[in-house]
Image: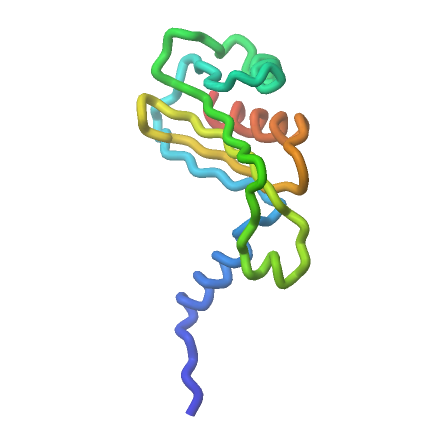
Length: 133
């Protein structure tokens, strides 16, 4: 007699493999009703600052607990079994985190191929703007 994996476990495993390193945008929003009035862009890269200022415009300030952090590690790689087995060429990601003090209350991430292009950051910043303001 063959053992069958229960449906909820099977669905959970399938979702994990599919969600790892795909071209979609992933969000985690734990802000609740708390919304920032303004943000400090916690990134020294000039082009990141320029894109952030263009998209969130008058919501930038220096004297706030709310920090916007852009994470884009060089040389990151996708270790998803599904992605490797299907030959996907995604090899990096960019994540934007909104932090209040030392707590991350909002994350948005996108996986992509190659170096981070400004278009990827613009897409994520626009989605962030819609979600938090």
